[in-house]
Image 1 (tube, helix red, strand yellow):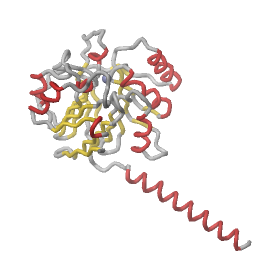
Image 2 (image 1 turned 30 degrees about the vertical axis):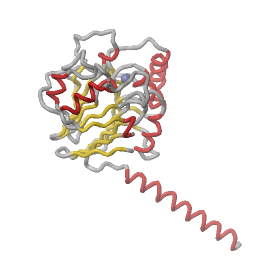
Image 3 (image 1 turned 135 degrees about the vertical axis):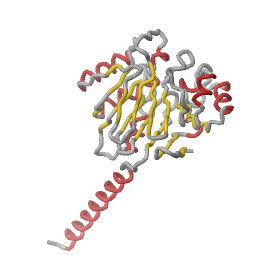
Image 4 (image 1 turned 30 degrees about the horizontal axis):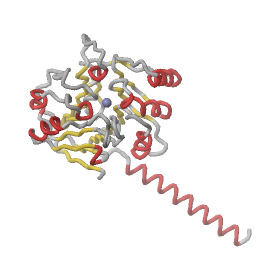
Amino acid sequence: MSEYIKRNRHRVIIMGLLLISIAVWSAVFRMPDGSLHIKVFDVGQGDSIFIRTPAGYKILIDGGSNDKVLDYLGKQLPFFDKTLDLVVLTHPQSDHLAGLIEVAKRYEIKRLWVSYSENDTAQYSEWENVLGTQGLEGRVVWSGDQLIFSDNVVLQVQWPREESASDDLNTTSIVILIDYKDFEGLLTGDADNQVQPYTELTSEVEFLKVPHHGAKTALDKAFTSKLSPEISVISVGSRNRYGHPAQNTIDLLKSLGSELHRTDEDGTVEIVTDGSSWYTKIER
Ligand SMILES: [Zn+2]
């Protein structure tokens, strides 16, 4: 064997080892770390929230209005991991649905929760087609349904109620209380003050995903005061045409002393908790 070939072979082996070690380390950094992570992705005008439980279960709530979610998911998961344990479509409007269509094409979704509502759009038909192609069927969930993970993270559906029926898609949003030890968070889709209180919830929550991108009608004052969220996150696009978030909504949350973040200013917002204390990380 010539010296030239030998040297090149060494180089190839070293490069190969380097790539393997990069892949292993990037996977290690994404391993479960015993904490609950909630990431409100900066997807522009829309919602997409990724949750990794302490044992590493992966939950995606909504997909935003474009395919940005694919990049974010790619960064959360090692390249070989294309599974999600639970995906929730809170309601079938474009700013929550569009990204999920792309996710459903590329990821194995083990469980899918959907609201009872449907939408009369070409995009919604595409969603139904993709689900059909993937052999995936959404389960319509109602208040009272729940999912308990082996690491004691509990998702409780708070809304809609079985007797509810509405033409306003926002009010058909699935609302979920996520509970881990002493930490509780309320994930609200676009379910605004028309349907609050969603629930007999009487306890305070640590985290509130502010409904409907912080719209003027996002929050019922009495309900929000009862929740008294320690941290609130508004998922909203910069310079959006709806004027979200509204000043009255911001003022209400500030008057309650809530630590307020918004994705148009802070980028992706992450809440990390061990079930007793929590902290936030913002992208910018
Ligand atoms: Zn929305």
